[in-house]
Image 1 (cartoon, helix red, strand yellow):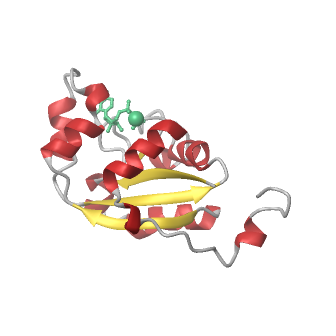
Image 2 (spheres, rainbow, N blue to C red):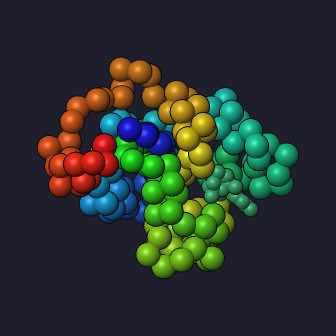
Amino acid sequence: MEKTLVLLKPSCVQRQLIGEILNRFERRGLRIAGLKMMQLDDAILREHYSHLADKPFFPTLAASMQVSPVVALALEGIDAVQVVRTMTGATNGRAAAPGTIRGDYSVSNQQNIVHASDSPENAAIELKRFFRPEEIFEYTSGAREYIYGADEC
Ligand code: UDP
Ligand code: MG
């Protein structure tokens, strides 16, 4: 089954929304395969946001990601990347649809609560960036047969 990386950003941690956002993913039916708190350094942020290194907002973005630890999540489900991106909403919280995480908890283009991988290819790369293999757990969710139909997985 597909896995994706989510980071609960300092905007989430500082506003004491960790439990609330984590609850959304659990409630949806995604399995938590990995979960840890991390203080991000310059090197991992340069790598993680390498596609944005030339943008004028990169310095403030990198600083905003180091204000406190983040919570890294490895979430699993059928089409987990797309399911989680849809839950996340548009990058700019002011444009994000109500009902999405960003649309419900943010009004900023930068302090937008969560990071979520944008493709299965990037999810695989990003999961390796934030988790060692032994930090990803392959237990079976007890609720699995009530989360998916018998012919879905
Ligand atoms: N970001 C920003 N200003 C912008 C665009 C993006 O500060 O004009 C930040 C924002 O926190 C965003 C992150 O850079 O989540 C990564 O940008 P990306 O385009 O990958 O958006 P995402 O995939 O997070 O929706
Ligand atoms: Mg992105």
